Length: 80
Length: 137
Image (cartoon, rainbow over all chains, first blue to last red; front, side, top):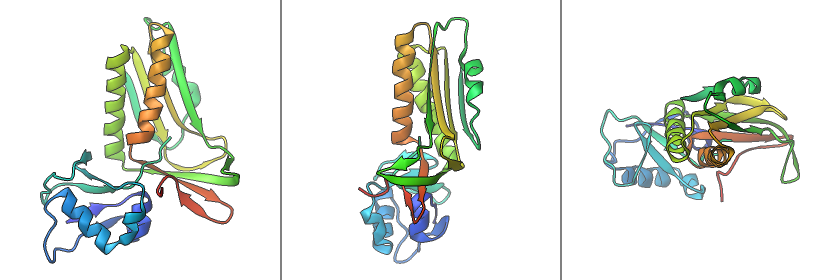
């Protein structure tokens, strides 16, 4: 599962895309994906917020992830 | 009618043509620009990046919400990306409506909601460091 990275998320992981490890299991929901990310990269815990977008829409934690979804990590936004 | 764009550079002179409308007696515009100081530290430049597909979708939703709520004739939401220097315009939002109350209120809604929801990120460059704005509490 590939995720797109922006802003500080790109700096934390050190790339603009990240392949989430398939082991021990693929995260099946937004909540599971966030749990995996904060374990692998504890810096995410220090952010003011951490959202996930699925197919370029903000996704609730209970949304299921499918293999062809476009998934992005949305750290705190700061436009304007 | 609405103009929703992510651009490299904003031309503030375009906006009157975008918003003028025969039924609009009021046009209100907000321009956000690069300020020279943040928390007493001198800002060298700002850099903006975006998740463009999602940003355009969120900007379109915000424009549609405002059009419906305030019966606007026209709306502009335009944000710049890339490196910007002090005094450069980085965002321009505007609304046109029959009377001024609606476009004043709508304009405030457009910029406030953009700052809350639209996936755009700003990095501030100081002489000795750089910081992603609002990333940490």
